[in-house]
Image (cartoon, rainbow, N blue to C red; front, side, top):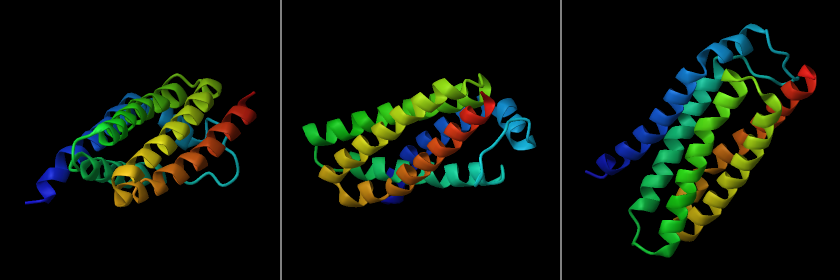
Length: 156
């Protein structure tokens, strides 16, 4: 069955997100209780795990689609950027929530956004559908940049 090819990739992404979230849970609780100043348009805390679960599923689905294409340098490059952005994604909550380094997290998140963009463009060369699945991730990360910037600005 085709869906069996997608499950490992989606589980990988969801697992990375779950582990990072678990390691950052105390800081996230502080953020959710109002102990951290938040900029306007900050969604309620329950929105974040829901949105991230969807985004990690889309990310894994896209990676699965790319991994199923013919071997070659374009596919290898796309998968390399997928792994790089996934590793960078893992680290951001640790910087922002666990260590509460909002300035460093802001820079890290800007780098992550760039990696997501490069990954999306690399995916597009291999599978347009896989690239399209990354657009919500790119947009949400841009919104996260705004939120991170707001926290950094208000915390100074």
